[in-house]
Length: 466
Ligand code: UGA
Image (cartoon, rainbow, N blue to C red; front, side, top):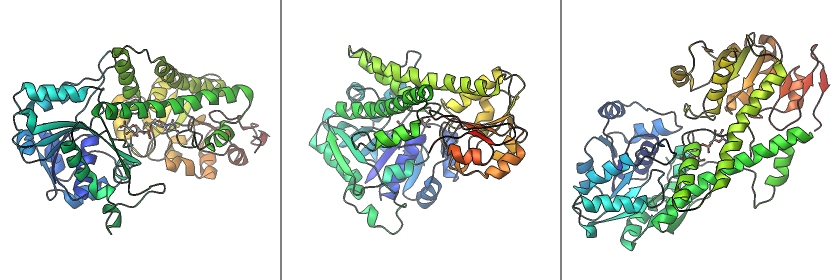
C-alpha cells in the first residue's frame, strides 16, 4: 500500500519505518527541511533499538522523506497524522499542528483516502479533523477519518510496533475499516512473523496480534485511559511503598504477593522516584481536561499526579536523612534519562532531582549511557559529567541511582566500593538486593524496603530479612 506519515518525530519516524518493513511504500512528510536533509543523509535522530537497521534497510527505497504533504496525500490511500500535540498552559493539548495538517490535506483529496490520527489526541478530534477538511473544500464522499492510537514505549518502540499486544482501529465506515485492516494485515495475518529477516520476537509476544475495531471516539479514549491506568498503577505502588517504609514491610514482597493475582499482574508495579517522559505527565493532564470538558471531575487523576510529584520529594528527604547536611556533599548520580534505554530527558524525575540537589548546594558528578548531551543543555553548568559509572562515583559521599538502566543493575560492586569516599548507595529504582549490597560493604537505601545499613567500619549492622 502507499501510505503517508506526517511528522517525522518519535511516533512518525517509528511508524513510517515499521510500515516500510511491513512492505508498504511510505512517504514520511515533515515541514522541517533540516530534519529531512539529515534523515536523507542517514542520520537517526532518536535513540531507539532496531531503528537504525530498519532505516538503513528501507531509506530511499520503500521509505522516502518529503516536504510536500499534498503530493504525498495524492499518492496515498492512508495518511497518518503523527505531529506533536504539546500541552498548553491549562493542560489541554495544543491541536494547532493537527489542524494545519488537516487543512493542507484537504486540497489534495482527489480519490478515496483515510486520514488517520496517530498522535495522542482528545476525544472528538476525529470530528474536528473531518470538519476542517470539509471546510476547506474536500468532497465528503472521498475521505473518512480513523483513529489508530499507538502504544509504543520509548526504547522498545520498534518491537512494540511489530509485536503489539493489540492494534486498535477506530473507524466510522466499512470502507475505512477495510483500508485499516489492509495496513495491518502483514501483522494480523502472521505473514511478518514467518519472515527470516523479521525484527527478533520479544519474550512475551503473542502473535498474531489482535485487531480491535471500535468507534473513533472509543479509540481516542482507549489511548488516554490506557496511559492513565498505567500511571495510576505506578502511583498506587509508590503509595504502597511509602506505607511499607512506615511499617517496616518490604514493597518487593508486597508486589510479588499482589502481582501474582492475574487480575492485577506483576508488570508496571516497580516503585521508584515517579514516572516521567513525554507521555504520562502530558496525557494525564489532557485526559483530566477532556473529562472536565465533558462535565466529569476526574479527581482520581489529580491524586495520581500528586503522588507522583510527592515521590520525588520523599526521595530527596531520604537523601537528606542519610547524609544529614547537603551543602558541599559530593554525589555520584547514575542516570538522567526519564527511564532506561532512552536518551529522552523530558519530564525526567532524575533531572528534577539533580536540579534540586544543586540548589541545596550538592556537587554533582553524573553519568548516563545516552542522555548526557541532552541533559547538559538544561542542567546548571556546575554539574560535572563522567565517562562511566565508576568515574561518576569517584570520591562520592553517596551514589544515587536515578534511572533504571540495565548497566546500573550490573555494576562491579567491588570496583564501586573502591572508588567512593563513603560506601553509601541511595537507589531510587530498587535495582539491587539489599543483602548483596551490605555483603559488599555498602549501606543501601531504596524505595519501600527497609534500609540495609553497614556500620562505618563496613560490617553489616542490620540486614534485611529475606
Ligand atoms: C508510555 C506507555 O507505556 C506506552 O504504552 C505509550 O504508548 C507511551 O507512553 C505513549 O503514550 O506514547 P513511555 O513514556 O515510553 O511509554 O515509557 P514507560 O515505559 O511507560 O515509562 C514511563 C515512566 O514510568 C518512566 O519514567 C518509568 O521509569 C516509569 N515507570 C514505569 C515506573 O516508575 N515504574 C514502572 O513499573 C514502570
